Image 1 (cartoon, one colour):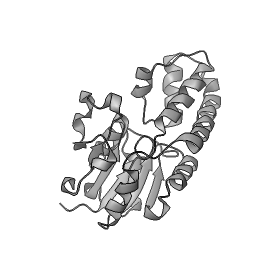
Image 2 (cartoon, one colour):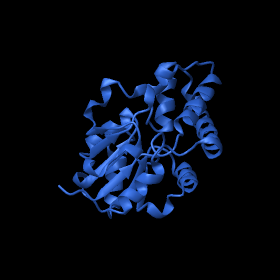
Image 3 (cartoon, one colour):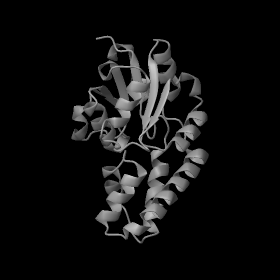
Length: 215
């Protein structure tokens, strides 16, 4: 099968924003006298902010009436931190020309709100490479549900079976596989050797390591 479409996750894959999200989340929960460990944080990487908050508010039995305030706090903190401090991930500058030179349609499918996507796309200078940008922000279900990837495929006028997707999170990988797309997973270094990535079609340590033979 000749594939002609590539879809990228964004946070932690194209830009090193996960430490910013992590700081924003831990700082926000700290306002409610909750100390979240890094191991706990990794359990919910890839979820939309609202689902992330709902999960930890239920887990720590926090007042759900305060959840909207916490959600707004995380988004504001994350956007400020990412805009000021986040850097491109290794290989980001190579991977878009790689697929454009091969006439691939290119999209982004992310859990982040579109306001943040705009910040990151401009920061990375990849506006001219993108044929579609999709956010799970207003979809009924976010990752690990496949909706955002299926939505992106529709906007790219592509069959899911023609799509190669790049992810860095476990929830994102499950989303891709549920959409019946091929998944290249690039976990963070501290998560790389875990068995949970077995469902991916390819596992790499960097976007820069993706080769033409992998197509």
